[in-house]
Length: 70
Length: 210
Image (cartoon, rainbow over all chains, first blue to last red; front, top):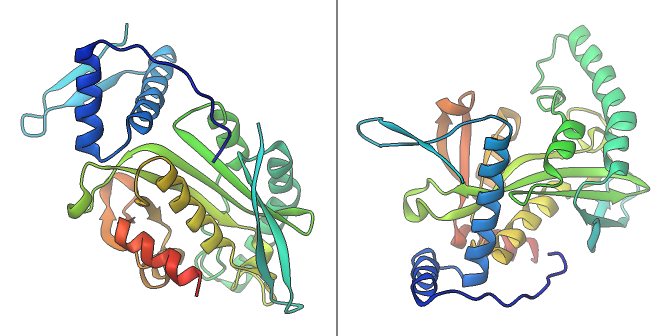
């Protein structure tokens, strides 16, 4: 909806394969998937910078693991 | 940077004319100022009237009067996982919306897929039936909902949207918008959670063009 800018992205063969598989699984373009990844990365890093903790929880055991962003 | 996304006609119920409204993204300081200076006083006076009449907030169409649009705009305008929209007509803000882009669908046919999550959507108090006997503009809700669907398509989410509805708005999302009611969400004050699938989004957009 807003103005877009273009960049060239260099990825390894493995990284490109992962990107293609994730985009295919989600039914999204590679650009859309990378934009979504950037949103999630910003959201997580800003929360951690504010001192919040981000966890993932196992669906059955309820065991939690803290997400650490380096 | 604020962008004009388009101009759309709104029905002025009082004059019967179609007036041009501008749709902007994101919410600007002018929109926040309108909320503080124009919306808040209307909410306050109507709330006092509702208390004197022993009306509920739903009966007075006031259940969102406490929403903190200025605070949310300040926190979210730099975030990539939030986007916002303002509708302007007659030199004042007629509608506002926040949409989150980091949510996942729950409806079984699309569970786990990305969707655009409408966090807040409101029309100006003077446009609301029940709030006033003479509401002015009609069509702001459908315009904003259609905008969320367009955003979802632009982001590769195929028109999927989700939201938690206030009780005053449940029937509109269910019956008019054709969204699926997934029932009360205990994690969200038991507000009913609604989703729109790709097919429902197509139907909604087609209905808007009839």
